[in-house]
Image (cartoon, rainbow, N blue to C red; front, side, top):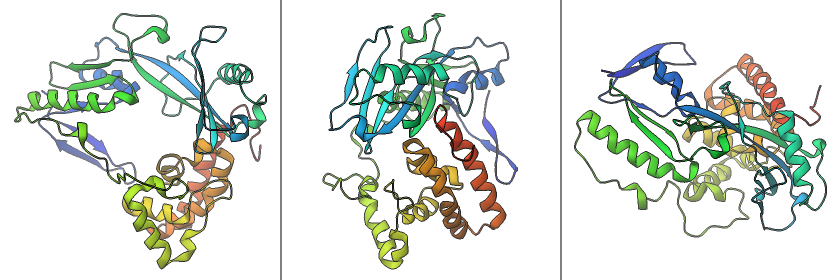
Length: 328
């Protein structure tokens, strides 16, 4: 029976044994990799599908209404959504056999989105209009060996292996809470713990506010915004924007380090805020200042800053595929 995990600290390289009464495999497209650790002969359950999105200037979709095309000329779905003062355009459904931490958009996926979006937008977008292009992998569960990923159900899949490993995969962002409830209920049984009624269905998330001002650049922090504003009153320099084309303030970097466990420039620009997916060029411009602020808050040296900037710029160039890349 599985009774824990061995985890490696990526900063120090140290390994740690963590014992537990139950282990949950919630690794998305890497589900089969974990199942293979338990049983090298395990049948794969994941049929990964790649979805690509482009971000364009809001001028391509004036107003606040979204566009939904349920069936393009070749039978696919297209949508254009107003998003953080930009236009988000997607998506594709491309079967992939190679699972990567950084999936790369294919040229034909980008061309498909640009070509079809041009039929519905106020003007025709070209490669040079792309602010950012990003890809994600869907962990679709294909126990029926369906060849068309678009036809595979988006329902989630819960499995308990002979060793007691609890695996949750499939599903969608919109069903995440139900997925978690089902998984925890099953984990309780495997661990032999007392059953308890799930309380998350009506539980307010951290930072919840009933009323907020959408013109406030810190409104998406909810009730935590008051603490960021206090930081800015103490140090007015933290109220400066990191880039003229994006709303993010220097105070948000410090907050991400102190309260949101950010440890790298990528952590902040790609995950604690949406800079990388909203405007990859602007994110690259922001990297040196973000590195400086993080190094100061974390006590890291100039070598750390240089490595962080170089690493992030290499990553960010992948988000400009099909568009001119600065410095290339």
